Length: 293
Image (cartoon, rainbow, N blue to C red; front, top):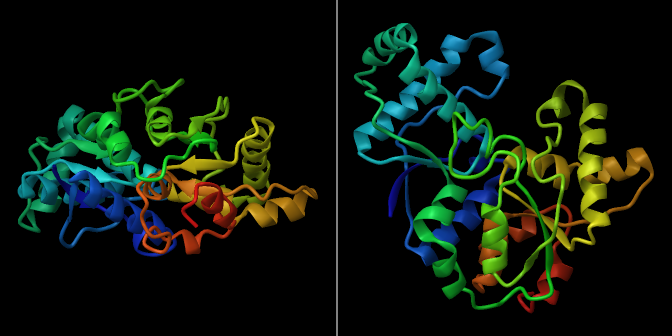
């Protein structure tokens, strides 16, 4: 299973542990992630698109065209990149005028996009190409007794016109992966609610209120940890958790792991190889509970 891998800006910087754990897990599952050469920023979600939609689509189109030249579908780990690349691909399929204008831009770089490449999220690959049976077969340290709140966020499964691998309101693909590891995917009614995303830049107080609600629900469900897919969600729920606690005078101490880190723990991989030492809310007690620490 080979894919044109689009890391996006965060996986080489603030979300390095997401890339580390995905690469480690991929080796166990026979997934080859071939990084797109000379990739560029996807065009963000709203920051660029709201200012200049054509520029945003053009940035994504260049990545799509390179992947198409590689003869592989694009796979990304970042929910924002997944949404942005998928939206651009959808626009280029449905809007002939924009496709013509974008073609003029990328043709100058010796590229063309015919629309033959699919944009996939890594969760889609895990669920539908690898399958939960194979994931279960690779488990060396079953996560029995671990209660995990599966947090999809608002971009991986929405809107339905962009992605079609899971239900946009009641997704279950991550739940199934978690259960294949031997853990319990707890009922988590906030699984597709927004964490506040980039409001951390424009209005942090609103972000903290939104993220606090997600943490409160997870604690109320007696979850041992949250599992997430998105670097921005991880930033708001893990890196900003102490700020949220201080702001509201509450205490959570809830570890937030990337799904790929959780999988790696169950596969018996070295915690450092999974980047677990980079998580700001320490997951060490969880590792001890799973006999991986």
